Each structure stands twice: as C-alpha cells, then as structure tokens.
Length: 172
Length: 71
Image (cartoon, rainbow over all chains, first blue to last red; front, side, top):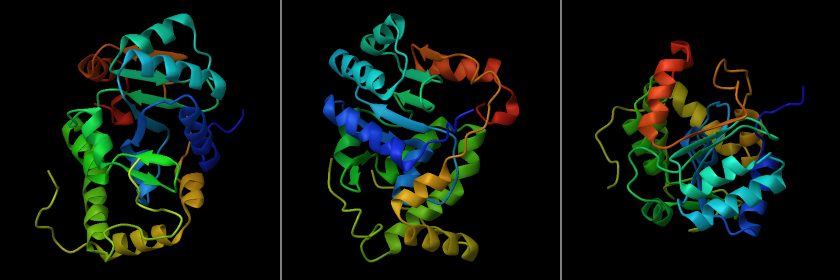
C-alpha cells in the first residue's frame, strides 16, 4: 500500500492547487501547529476553509486536480456548506473544518494567520490553541499543555516566533 | 484576545525539543511529523460530511473506539 502519510510535498501540492483555484483556507489543528514548529506527530492535515458556495466549488475543483474522487454528492455538500468534511480516499487523508470550535469567523482567523515559507497560510498558534481548548477531546487535552508551553516559548524568543529566513511572517 | 497567562517555567526536556524543532527545516518537520495508521471506523468510508460540528462530535462519541481520543 502506498504511503498515505502527509508530507511537505503534499503540503506544496495543496498550496499550489488551492492558490490556482483561488481557494480561501488556512492550515489548522495539530498539523497547523507543526507548521509553526511544534514538535509532535499527527495523522492527517486539517484545513479551515472559508464557508461559501463559491469557495466550496473551488475546493471541489482543486481536490479533483489533487486526485481526490469528488462525486456529485460530495461537491454538493462542499457547496452547501457543511461544517465538517472528512476525506479518506485520495492521495492522503484530509479533514476540512469549516466551523472550528472556538473561532468566530474565517475572516478573523485569516487576519491573525501567518503565511509560512511564503506559501502555506496557517492559522495563528493562539487560534489553534483556542480551538483545541474549545473542542476539548481527550486528544486535545493531552496535547494542550505542551502546545501552550510551545506558544509561551515562541513568545519568549526575541522575534516572537521562528525567525528562520525561509519562514517570513507575512500575512496571507 | 491574546492567550497570555502566568505559566510555570517550561519543562527542560520540552524546551530542548522546541529548540531542536526550530533548528529543523519546515520540510523535515512536515516529512517526519505525519504518521499514517489505520483508524478503525474512521477510515472505513471514502468520505463523510456533517451538517454541524455538534453532529460530528456526536457521531465520534457514538461510533469511534474511546482509545482513539475523539470523545
């Protein structure tokens, strides 16, 4: 069986196809925290797309180009604006979280997000923490103390975040 | 709202992990942080959609094994 683990290359493919199709989205969840430098492991990538019919149509088109089998029902659900879509067939697993707990609106999260490595729009670490606190599943409760310590560590650095030159803190 | 709270000093082992992580490239962090394992029930449908997050949480509580941590 092919390795279905998410990788940097797959992140690049998402970034390329979503940009080409004009999709509004942010990486979020533990996968988003890993973009910020959080040292941990996870199983799949979580995206927080803007919920709108047009963005739903763009997501469906981008997913097809990425190799996800998007049938008529799935496209209809993406356009209609479901809160949560879980994809398990395709080149890798992907969760689309259109209404993450603890975050009021996509626009607010986007205004606080960072563009990491010049191409990956990622929710702020504070928003990722806020969302995990609100979700409060066993796996979130297990991650939060270390994630909060990591956020405190980043704040204690002179730049307030990873200053590596390949990761300018641009706004998306 | 900024998340600023009084916190105890960071565990020295965590601190070493954080520093080491930021020394790694983004490519390395992504290539080594994602581990795919089969998750029963969760991975047994090509896709699922949920009208609301509450519906999704209820489905997780009622259908997934507790040890997956989604409860």
